[in-house]
Length: 385
Image (cartoon, rainbow, N blue to C red; front, side, top):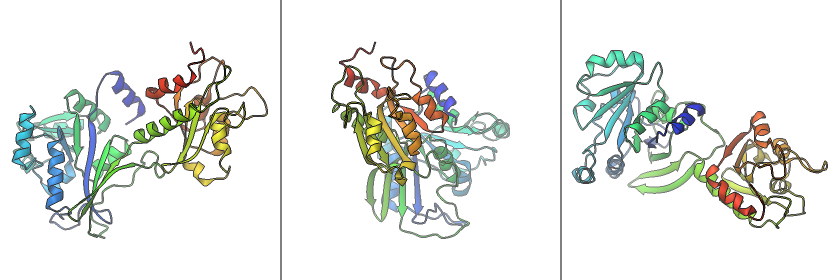
């Protein structure tokens, strides 16, 4: 999914569901073996955990390949959990969804004949193929000439689906992670080794956002029977907010000035803070980003995979020729990602183009508008109108 389509969704007011990927895999990364019989990776306790996650979801999605291979019913098995759903005003079973590009789905599969409502997302060609075979069994929705998972989530949002559980398989999990559409990942690791190159793995090779240096947040680790369940947050949003809040706290340390902003900066690599700085920390003219970068060796290899968090847009010009603008210093350091809270106004500089210059040189720039007010509050003594 492109950034443009995501922005369009926001403008249209569509609230996409929270996407939770759930998978069980062997220690060496396989989700099954190559035999005709399904490999049971989870034990009874972990199956019960998955049943609870299903019960907590508004919809469950599975890929057509997994549907054909495993022929699952995809139900909430616990009668108590189904009763709790009904008591909460929900359907007894979550909406069941499958995705197919080809439309090759057998109407005899158990998926269609158990549980509540079913929904199929497919292509224009697949919809034509399924029009008759699934009549009365499922609603069929075309996503166009190709599968677009962003459009799929938009449609689910319009249907009121707030929480989507994705149970695979390989292509589906890969698609959600490659398009940066997953909000949560439950990874159950079984104490088994498969070792068969013909067997399916958790993920295919793909161009994942920020890979290989963007680190997920490990939110929880649990031992369930002999299974290790890891809960990851794939998107860096939570980390971005945490480190920006740290930068705002640093801005509080700035000596006040009537002719300059109070700014805090944090440099992070591999999820770890490696340097900090704030305006006027070492002298009356030093900027926050400058101060933080001065604390690191220019050849520090961590800079090539770092993010610099700054409460204000990095400057693109300086009042003195002896100091390099912070935008140029960031580019010289080779930092590939910048996160800022607010753009520089015209209070002291007529036309700051720090963001534009960074993006022109291939640097990823993220603006956390939700923290702009908190960052600006460090400058209440200045007229920012």
